Image (cartoon, rainbow, N blue to C red; front, side):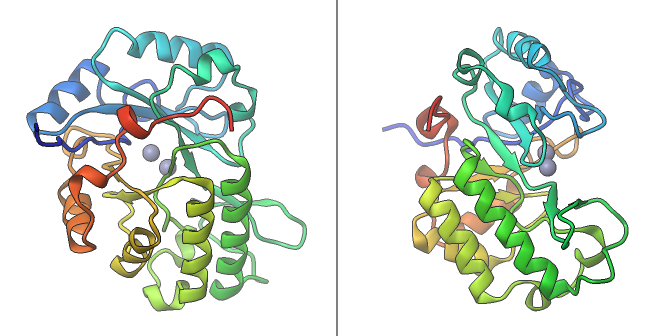
Length: 252
Ligand SMILES: [Zn+2]
Ligand SMILES: [Zn+2]
């Protein structure tokens, strides 16, 4: 039996907001002893991204000649993922869903993870409950293989201590939603999850996925932290998400 080579399921190129060409990314990731995949932003709501169905077709055409897994990062709050025809969906090796915005106010307007202020009515605890409400809607409805950066929260509260954001009950809800929808939990190198949550996901039987979320030469393919975390929670490398084995389902 040959040993499993880790795969970076989440990395960006110049087709969205990354610095690297397809060729450069593949070369850099391979040089780290990691298998490459490309998962650019496919969303009308990211400034540098692929924004149309035709654009997604061209994106997949561009990836096709290369020996690289064909992923894509879709925003839950954006309509583009709903508009893709099956013939395009089936060309992805894996699809990643991101909670880049959440409806966390009485008026249900979207609050971006990158806004600099949270509305006054929201304490961190009130926000987090609604964050997980949104996550549950996403997991139930969005046909994706991986939840990107599961611990990404809005900027104003991003650096609060873990215990002020995550209760065990919220963690349970997140893990249960992923388990039911068969969505993998990304161990992101960019937005690093805390061990208790990764352990909970693994113990529940949620598959773990490795993602650099790399945009630069220094970041692409850097899986040192994700691999270390997977090992710490007792996940065998061969049990981690592999797009070629566990990847995308055209219809769910
Ligand atoms: Zn993202
Ligand atoms: Zn990303």
